[in-house]
Length: 292
Image (cartoon, rainbow, N blue to C red; front, side, top):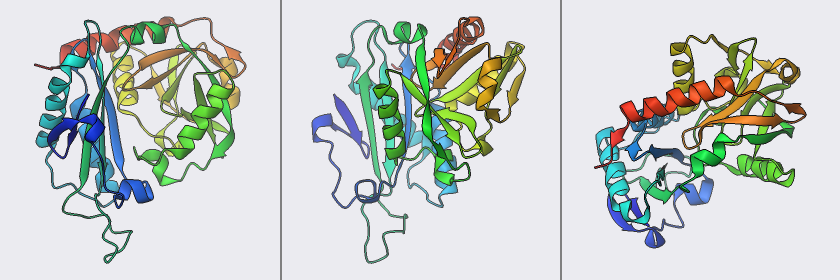
């Protein structure tokens, strides 16, 4: 596999960062994960826009333009075209840290002239989307998150809490775990946003509940409205699960995955999920960027 490190294409095995890098020492960094769909690079502009928004929120800027980042991503995809077989797509991850810590200025000073920017590309299994179409089982985390903690709303590399949550899910034989906030409301999964279908409407928690508003989440809301569905961003008390007819989770790699079960609630229908999923794939083919 070939990685892109600050614009240079090298073997992924040789893509190292300094032991004084902000990301290594303090877990300071941002990342975006996305993919190709049927050979087309999808929603890259949306991901770079969110990266820009998160940088602004942190008071941190990059001396690299969005156009340059886009070029680096496409070059990375092309450089890794030989590791895929027919029917395979690529998962891309763009990771950005402030670079080397200048201890004389202070470990809290993020602005540097040379940030660390790494792009990885890894092949997805050929049957990745078909397997996810069958649906996941999810559990609810036993620990609650404060909804006003700002890092929940930023795509930060500080993912330790999410790692612990996913390990909890796996220990329970589940695919995903869903967080409750300190109000007892459903928010999001470890790496996904959560949607419920209730009374024929699409319900999802608003950002103020303490969640990361994913790129796929915003796109799903747009697609659902185009299909004539009413979308409600509202708090989701855990008791509301009993009213839900369907449930699904989203992110930029899995797209849309129906939930077969969430904690004790079993979902027997996924008609709405299938409709939106179909619209998503059509959208990806119409608006995705050709790799070559």
